[in-house]
Image 1 (cartoon, rainbow, N blue to C red):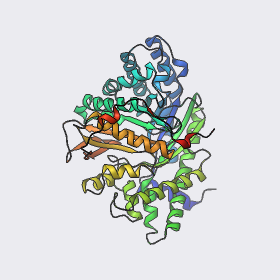
Image 2 (image 1 turned 90 degrees about the vertical axis):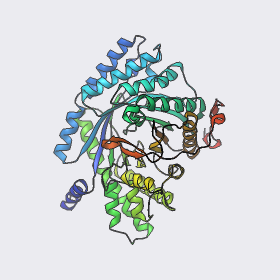
Image 3 (image 1 turned 180 degrees about the horizontal axis):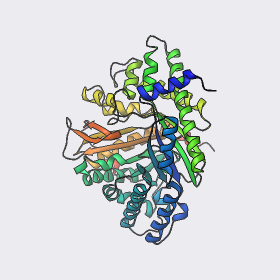
Image 4 (image 1 turned 30 degrees about the vertical axis):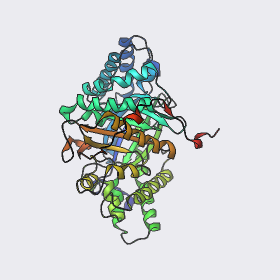
Length: 453
């Protein structure tokens, strides 16, 4: 039985501490939609998505109203489109698929649809390369489509040809959406060790090992964790860790309840709960605020990486105790534009790109929602991607890059997106180049500890 104190505690989390179910994401396999004729393929894709997800938004809203738990987003993820587009003949065909996905998202009412993606850690097929080269056009012509490219893994190494190409794609995407401060780049993620069941955008796609249709839920509560830590400001690390674990447990239990209810009503399997401390621009909903509550003066100060490592680990431990299946990217996110505390730390000079890179060794994702000067060369962007992919490959973890070249802007300026994407100050980038490094081509081999058979 749930006690009255637990009910009151959950109400407080929602009303005062910005707790929410960030997303109910329906994963849909499109493997049965492949077709050499692009018009027939679009018909199959549209029919299946709208049949499976037609009630997703309505049921998500019903659950939110009945349980009194905010469900902020309803989203769809699909099979990486390059896998079903092997018989398409041009980049224009892939852009048409992206536009069809955007129409499906609008027709079903979801916030975003992810899966305009390619998995190229070891090499690129012609379809992979066509999809990747079509990304700038696809993201500039759509509103709700999100794209991701996995260019490395611990088992396969890093595809440096893909890394070099992604530097060019990110620059071109920024140029194509310069009138919107490079918004297209906010919907594009480059991964190492991308998970198959991530419900969070922009990196969500439906992995080939997943069921035909599945429900994954992402919950978030940085404000809840910060409020809990405020009650034990003079505690030692053991007590601090216990408080984080207990709070993560409570948050995840709510996510499990919503996930099971959504799966039952939609009559599809329940996949995973992703417990990720995903911040928003709202005051008090900040991962940087948690780190400062733990004891660093400002995010980026000495001690920040250690505090983040502890936070990430305890969040995972608490979540694992609370749900049958915890997956996705569970842990702490550190996107700059979406976290008011991170924004302030950058503006005050406490947080640099190099410190953020160090922090990604111990957080759940990587260099996320970072605005860089608009004149940053494509090769430099590729070099930053390569560095981050190396951290993921060697440390056997998911890492990612979501950079936004701010065309026409420089350090001291900012980009504005609004909503959950927030705004970001343009951060300086190392002025020394790496053109010769990223132009070598080929593949960085997998590390020795990847050989486990």
